[in-house]
Amino acid sequence: MIIRMPLSRQEGFSLVEVMVALAIFAIGLLSIAAMQVTAIRGNSSARRLSEATSLLQDVAERVLEEPYVNTLTAYNVLPAAASYNVTSAPSYSQIYYKDIFPVDSPALDQAVAYTVSIYLQNPGDLVPPMPMIPTDALRVTVTVSWQEGGRQRNVPVSLLKSQNMESSYVSQ
Image 1 (cartoon, rainbow, N blue to C red):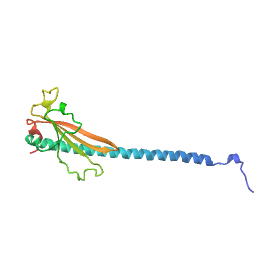
Image 2: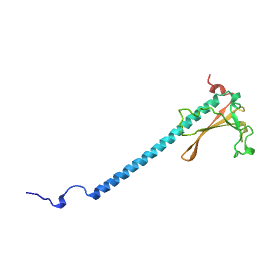
Image 3: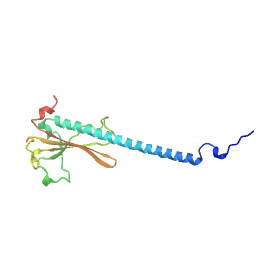
Image 4: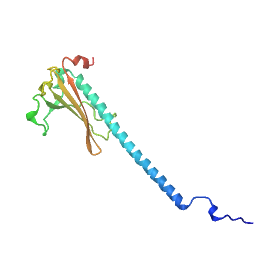
């Protein structure tokens, strides 16, 4: 004896329900993949920023450790950039550069080219002058720059270096 059930009592999923569920699942997976790509890009950018900051700190410390009398002669003087307005520039300001960090260091991402710029300025040439800064002080601005995602990124820091402050910065 065969027992047949009416069609309205059959259980299961229709093909339309399965297709809708698969579409929702696929959209969820694609969203997770896009989120993962964004996270990887963010981590990569953060790594480069961290490397640049570490390089910046290393270069700034090396500049501060140089004896004050050798600071100006320790760097190769480069000509001022073409966009530099000479008429409004302080008279003692120059752009200096010295290769003080090995580019082939394993600590740096080899796919990224970091550029280090060192700018020395006599704060006495600032307008208006700053009376609280010693007259023998040098304002040292170190900038690390690199290309990322088709745009220029940079991390700058400015420091003061003076003969009177030198003993606290020079390691013995």
